[in-house]
Image (cartoon, rainbow, N blue to C red):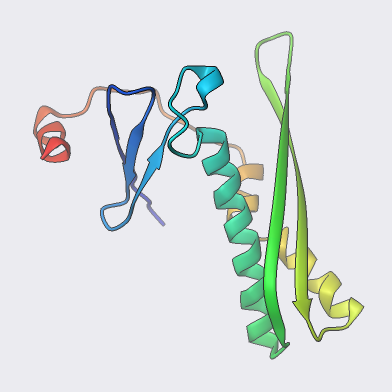
Length: 145
C-alpha cells in the first residue's frame, strides 16, 4: 500500500503544511527548538499515528467480535537514548484505557491486538529510507499552487 504525503515548509518558525491531498494539518517545532509551537512536532506526529492505529485496531476487533465497548483512549510517552555512534534508540510506552462491558480475557485480547496494529508492525520493521533528492520542478510548481 503506497502512501504519499506532501510538505510545504513556510518561513515562520519551522511550520509545515502537511497534506495527503485530501486532509491538511500544520506541523511545527516547539519554542525551545526555535519553532512557533503552532502545530505538532515531528515526533508527536509519529506517536499520534501509532496511537491512532492502536485505538482503531481495538475498536475494529471489538466490533468484529460483537463486544460492547465505549471510549478507547491512549497515552503514549517517548524517550530517546542517544548512542555513542549517533544512532538513536527510542522507547515508547503505551497505555490504553478501554471502557466497556468486556471480560478481562477480552480486554487482554484487545490490548494484544493493539500491539499487532499496522503502524506498530511497520515501526518495528527494518526501514529502508531513500536519500533526499530534489523535487521535479513541475511537481514543485504544483505544490506551490
